Length: 115
Image (cartoon, rainbow, N blue to C red; front, side):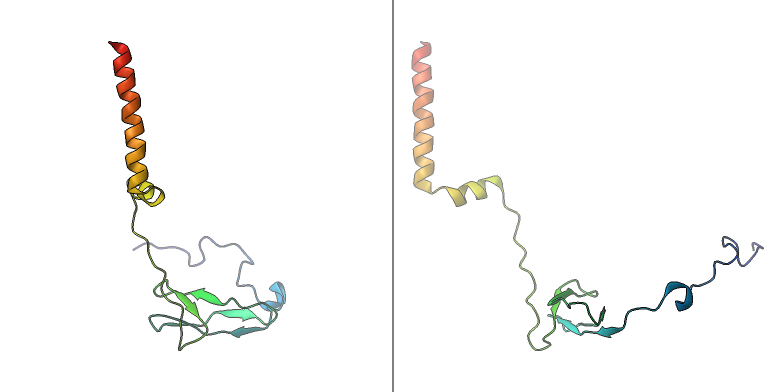
C-alpha cells in the first residue's frame, strides 16, 4: 500500500471553481430527440441558441429527430465498389466493345509494321 498525500498533484487554491469565479451560466432548456431504435436523447441548449433538426444518438450512433413517431431513417451504407464497377456505371457494354475493338486494331497495326 502506498502512503501519500490525498491532495498530491494539486496546487494551493485549485479547488472547484464556482459561479462566482466563472460567471453565471446561460439559461438552458432540454430538447428531446428520438432515433429509429427508440432511444431518447435530451441535450441541453442555451435559450437563445438555435436547436438542430437532427442529433446523433449517443447510444447507437443513428441520426435522431424531434418527432418521436417518425424518427429519421438509418443511413444506407453503400457497399464497396471496385474500379470495374465504376467503369461499368459510366460505359455500356457496346461502348466497351467499341473501345476494345479500337485498341486491338491499333495493336494489330503496330505488329504488322514491325515485320
